[in-house]
Image 1 (cartoon, rainbow, N blue to C red):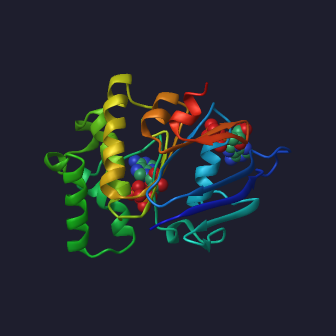
Image 2 (image 1 turned 180 degrees about the vertical axis):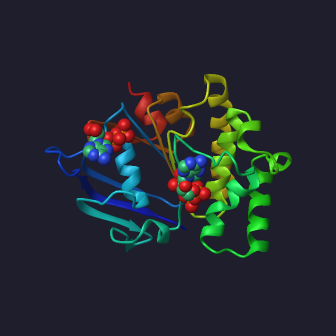
Length: 227
Ligand code: ADP
Ligand code: ADP
C-alpha cells in the first residue's frame, strides 16, 4: 500500500515573485490513478517534480505512507518517473538502455537480467533488446522509456506528458497500454497532461489546475459531466 499526501504544498521558484503552485492539497489512495490536467504553465510539472524530489517544496509537506519526504533525496524515494523528452542513449542497445539505471544502482547482473527481460515482456519489446533506439518506432521507443522506469518495481509511478511527442493515433493506443500497465504493476500513479481526453480515460480522479491553483478534484464523471 502506498499513499501519497500533498499537504498544502506551495512552490515559489527563486527569482519569481509569484508562487507557481499555491496550496496544493491532495490525499492519494493506494493504487489510485491520478491525472493532473490544465493548460501549459499552470504548475502540473512543478507539482510532479516536487513529488519526485527534483524541486524543493517551498511550503507544506509531502508524505509517503505517513512519512515526511521533503528532505529525502530523489534516489531514496522509490519512485519511477517518465518524462516527455525520454532521451534514450542512441549508441546503447535497448537492453542496456533499460539496464542503465539498475547498473548505476549496483544491482546484481542476474537481477538486472531478470528485471530487464520481465519489463521487455510486459511491454512487448522482447525481440528488440539487441537493437539500438534508432531502429525502433516512436511508440516502441516510448515503451523503452516506460521499461526503463518500471525495472525497479517502484510503487509510485510518475508520468509527465509521456505521450505528447507521439502522433494522435499512437497516443490513443499507448494510452490504453499505460492504463493496463498501471493495473498490472499495481502502482500509485500520477500522470500529467494538458489533454482532457487523456485525463478522462485514464484517471480514477482528475485534478484540474489553473495558474498555480487546484480548481477542482473529482472523478472524470464529476469533473466532465457537470449538469
Ligand atoms: P505546467 O507543467 O503546467 O506546464 P510548470 O510546472 O512547468 O507548468 O510551470 C508552472 C510555472 O512555474 C510557470 O509559470 C513556469 O514559468 C514556472 N517555472 C517552471 N519551472 C521554473 C523554473 N525552473 N524557474 C522559474 N520558474 C519556473
Ligand atoms: P533513471 O531511470 O534511474 O533515471 P536512466 O537510465 O533513465 O536512469 O538515465 C539516467 C539519466 O540520464 C536520466 O536523467 C535520463 O533522462 C538521462 N538520459 C537517458 N538517456 C539520455 C541520453 N541519450 N542523453 C542524455 N541524457 C540521457
